Amino acid sequence: MFDVYLVNEKSTVTAKGDGPLVDISAAGNRIFLLQLNITAAVEQESLDVSVQGEPDEKGAAKTLGAFPQLFYPGQHSILLDLSNAPAVHAMRAHWEVNRWGRGPETPQFEFGLKATEVSPAVLGERQAQGKASSR
Image 1 (cartoon, helix red, strand yellow):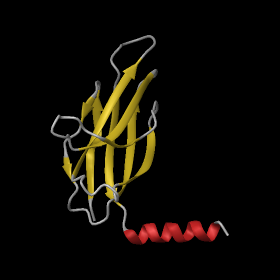
Image 2: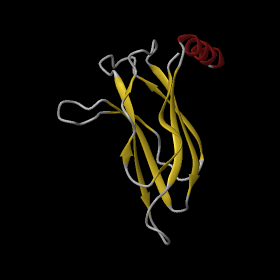
Image 3: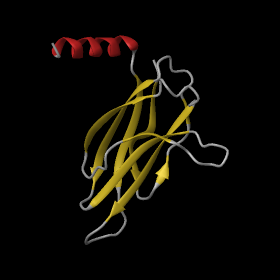
């Protein structure tokens, strides 16, 4: 089972940045649960977090998935399905922060981002539950 932090827990960021490139070729299933845990934030600021594939020959990275813009501490999860993207062998977190209003101009968020491979058994179970509830 593939389980890795794309951003270590309780990392503090004050500017736009990228996490390290993480090799995902060992993952048996190409569907990942991305869990973003914001543990601290100040008022009047926003955090945009996305997951990108490895940069191409021009240095540009393709966005594979993104969280909605966030403002407050809390836990947020999305599924990232790379089953139709076999060429993607690595991914990394990318974040952008913004601050407005009164007080210090520097934004500050404390968060972590974890990627966990979702087993086919769990996916099959969820699909079966969805079909049963739609009847």
